[in-house]
Image (cartoon, rainbow, N blue to C red):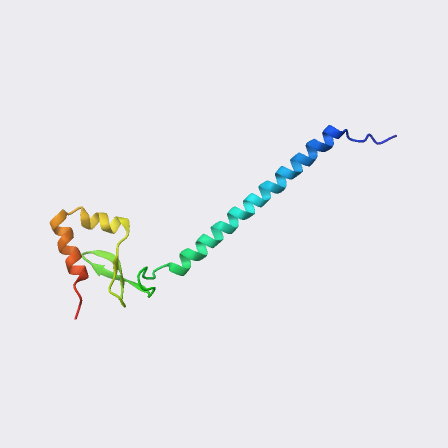
Length: 105
C-alpha cells in the first residue's frame, strides 16, 4: 500500500491553519500578560494617595467610609460616595467638602 502525498493546496491550507493557531495563542498570551500587568499596577496603587503616594486609611464620615491620606490630608471618594454626598443638594456638598478639607488641629 502506498502513502498518498498531500497536494500543494492541502499543504498550504494546513500551514495557514497552523499559522492562525500560533497567532491566536500569541494573542491570548499577550492578553493574559496585559491583564497580569494591570492587576500588578492596581495592587501597587491600591489605597495609596494619588497626590503624595502615602497610604490611605478609611475614615468614617457621616455614616460612610471614605478614603483619607494621613500625610497630606487628601480625601478621595468613590463614585457611590460622591453621588451620596452630592445627592443632598449643592449647599450640603459645599458644607461637607468644607468640613472634610478643614485641617484638623
